[in-house]
Image (tube, rainbow over all chains, first blue to last red; front, side, top):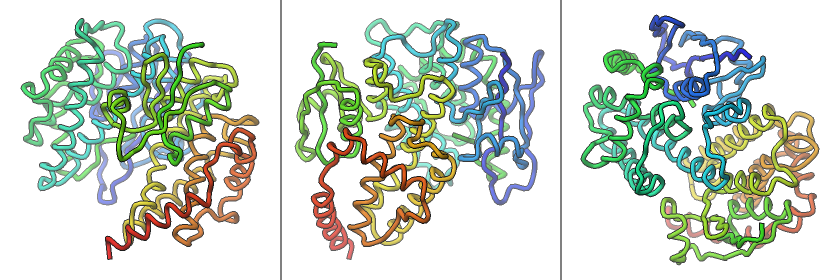
Length: 251
Length: 222
């Protein structure tokens, strides 16, 4: 089974005239714009399950008709195409991957109650993502307000994850990442780059020790390292995006 | 399952109602705990410390929050009378539309709470949501996933019922049959399903309730 994640341009900003392409040549394939976290989620999930895929990058200023056909509702990335059938929305794609490839490792727990809890927290991490996104796409004057929103979410996560994982703490199995690890990697792996460019502490190790150490541990996982681009590249991309008034995200 | 099942909610909440529909469609017995939203019970705050909101389903003492996450849990725990298609791809499409309802539905709730420019914006967004669903989702199917009612119908059903109530409150036609013929037909079919028909809050009561709320809202803004 060959799967093709079609990567599409984010919604066109009216002012954006130029093309933005970000390619890193690796041994096996071209890696695209790692900035787009929702894309990273899908990539991580596919890699965790050892599902072979082909990655196709699109030009940011030129929406392919194929993509518009595949995702007419949002016209956004990521779109996963399996056997010619398209699927949009990253969390939903993760659920699809989970159900279609029943091989280990599982992305979601077996027990329905644990699954409900995982879905709840995954949706909360999504809200954190939206708060961080607001921060990086808002004007400097609004930063103080938007960072507070992100802190609120982080506080809840800090407390909630402590309870969720219990006293045993969290041992990350690099081969068995699961949805929550994937979501947190995708949203927060590049937090230091964001902090450098926007000159604001997001995952403050003093305020959010659990979240901070969780992200540090995740960033050591080989699979995560394969998908998340190095710090300098992300910083450069963020600067570029900022200067050109682009919106770096998608669904 | 034989274990205790309680639903904490309110009679006027569209989110509570979704869970009621799911439980009743599957014929699952449960106890309903009516919460007073101005005086939330200690139990509710303990069960949902993050959002402090209803509905919360408590199964054998374990709480689950968020209406659509609760319904997924119900679906997995009691798989009879499925609310999702069996085929994986179709299930995923169903989940996409449930998410769409969750993402865009709030525009409808905003039409209850806003005035002036904000109200106009909320109305515009609500109509955009309806347009997309009309065009891209239903097709010629009786319900969102085919011949049987399911999760997507439940998600949109509550949104549309409340939207229609607000049309009366605002005195503005939003869900027009000639603009949304498929949705209209679907909504009629939906309301005729016996479980739904017998578990809809009284429309007139809701209208009176929300008219009063709107009056005080407008008075406070004037």
